[in-house]
Amino acid sequence: MQLTPSDRRTFLGRAAQFAGAASGALTLPFAVSSASEVESWLAGEGVAKLDDPRPDDVVARDETYWSRVRALYDLQANVINLDHGWTNPTPRSAMEELVKSARALEALPAEQLLQQWETVSTTRLRAALASTMAVPPSEIALVRNATEALDTVLLGFPLKPGDEIVCSSHDYYAMLDALDQRRLRDGVVLKMVRPPVPAASMAMLESLYAEAIGERTRLVLLTHPSNLTGQYLPVRRIADRAHAVGAQVVVDGAQSLGLLDDPVRSLGCDYYGASAHKWLGTPVGLGVLWMRPEHVTKVWPLLPPMKDEKGMARFEWIGTAPEYVNLAAVPALALHSSLGAARKAKRLGYLASHLRVRLRRTVPEARFYAMAESGMTCGLTAIEFAGVAPEVLQKRLREQHGILIQGMGQIRSDPALRGVRVSPNVYTPVSDVDRFVSAVAEEIPRLRAGSVKR
Image (tube, rainbow, N blue to C red; front, side, top):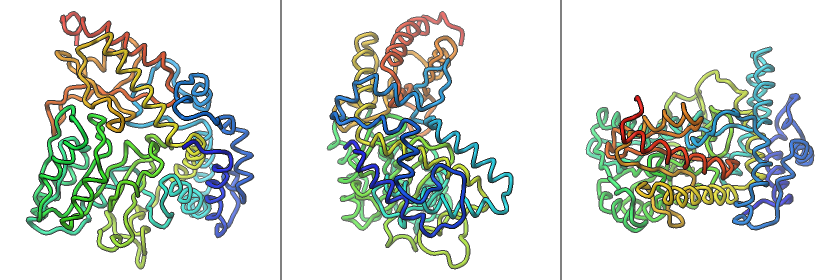
């Protein structure tokens, strides 16, 4: 649902609540004492202009609206960036805050490190991020990325030899590496689900996981959606099956945080990790870990916490870190809140649908790694072109057409995947998607004929 001005004030007011205990003054946009001051700052940045009463599916097709969103970013003009599934650019307001806060910290780090943490990171930022996730601030830990968040659980969850972990060949490689280390170190058993490409239905995927989950299953890793195929999973239904045998569920939400109104509780999981620098659009270097409160004491932190640390703070200690990244995340989260997860998801769905239609018409043999049905995928479109190496196509598009995509060859967990991943942002114009399709149609015959040097 699109946030109204009243909704935004509620969100910002909630964030301001957690600033009451903070002391000291910073010359930051978000070093304020009331939501009205934040509203004033947002209006000056043009965010207030993004309020629109029309239904999300109507706004999703309005190129003028999204061009206003695009104007809030400083983007590299000579590149068509269709690789936002890795990292999103951060808005101008966040970049300006990043530079200003970095200068403040480096001018007097002995004071600014703690001051920035207390006045913004653990108060305003924590509240804003928790609000985005629809969970209490006390249930999240601020970490550096999804890998750190998820490895905390995968490596710290109590297991003994013979215990089983269910995972998938389409999980993120860093998570599979962590599980393999757990196998070698602790003698646990990995049961690998190998989904078909594309999966015919959510019911089929649920059945595959149900077959893998058994009496010895202790942990189930679910990626939502897969960064390799863009395929969503029926996480809630799989989680119910895991809980029925006493197993717990950890969700890799790196590719869906920012596209769901209720990204955590709706999944029915026990643990959740994600990066904020994807669809939330914060600067690189912020991630989040959530877990049910009853599980907090059973998981070993990646790094030993300070003595007597309680709750989710046990998972935040990494020593001295660039605190200014957290400060710069706050205006990025404000922009996300102004747009709303549902509206962003509708826009990405529209762009993905447009891509599929144009590509099927222009390159009919293109093979998509996920079905187009509603709820099966959003944001990421993985495509295979028979007889064309993905890394070669990626390089050709970048060098000859200024188009950036992700090549996905040589996948260790599933070598059969030989596609490219196209992930526009919400502000990507339809014309950029069309230029990608035209470039592919031009280059595919050349690459198949061998007339292009590799």
